[in-house]
Image 1 (spheres, chains in turn blue, orange):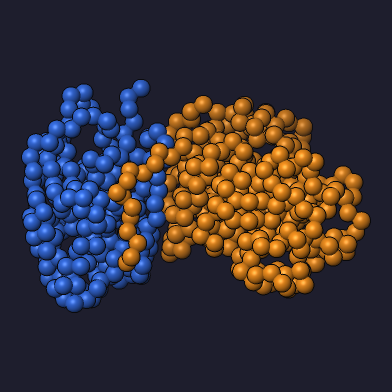
Image 2 (image 1 turned 60 degrees about the vertical axis):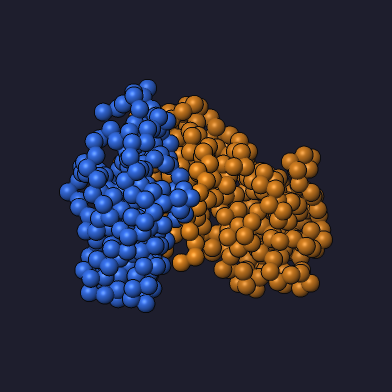
Length: 206
Length: 323
């Protein structure tokens, strides 16, 4: 039987990827400085597009999206002097592949500390790939109430969408092949800020 | 917000999620118990949402087979199943073919022929769930079998203890009542001793099973002495329906010597938790005023019951059945 798809550290969100395959680092796409600047620009764009921070809720998708959301909240505070509410989404229970994976994945809490009714909710994730994670996150958000808008901020958009989903705020667009993997590392989880382009070794599933 | 997701270490490999069924606490490793309790915390949050429902079990069918009367546990399981978006089939003995003489195995296999993924069963015979598990391919969750086990009750008791006291390890817990006939007591003894709590079982000598100390608990027939220094007491309902012959001279005498009364609590720490699996016999095992004063905890057990059952259903639901 083939290995069931499992969410791995090297991979963001709910998209399945084969685990335990060797991964070769091909290029360093962003360093600490570039990540910092990209998040600062995204914070500015969020404020500009929403005419201020008043009706915002920043909601990060576990795990790295949550850390990015925390940083964006800090940036907005530095720029506008306002602390916007921060939420953390765990989309595990909304995944569309729960029926096909070998065992129920670890579920952790979703924390939305404020009402999102009539708010502009900014979903934050590290990598936008198939769009399945974002679909799950939108479904989860809507279960908390009816937001005025849902917008999407990502650090890297790598293409290969499987759903009609696009990002409103993008740190960097990185055209990739499907064999490649974007690995986002953040200080909070990995001890270092970097975005790497990697390639899966032989024994591919495509 | 201060809490930050712990992602530095990779998550430990869950083991309970690999099981076919939940038949009892006795078979579980301590890590599996904590795995269920941790998952239950996530499901407590779901209860507070505007839409109290997640799509995790969409497309799965769960049959509730209750061969014994139960309102509380059956409703709790049904709500847990519905809040996970499962399709629910309720099967109660009075409306079923069991009344016409069908065997348990035939009933179960008929239900399974309808492509049911999980069966939640309560049965008057100890071991009925183990029997069922051997004869069906689907997953089985024990909702109470005879005087054997009631695993989800012990899990919700533990979840409530941990929520209020912050831990389970090292806690001093008294289980009070008819220990011999209580599946709640047995599951609680297994669970609490596995996670490192110190358990004392207390009741009249006729209600304490011989050699119960071999399960790693202390025994006492003196409520006041047992409650001294306890962090919590789990007060069992006196189940007259399970006693073949009377084990106590009278209800009044039990209430006087073993009932939890204000008088017995007087010299104890007001922080001591009082749990009750319900339904309460006010005036027998618990005095009315005590029940009132501790109703928050006792109702919290009911709320946590739904979250714990959601956790068990979710964790077992994944993937293919392994041996």
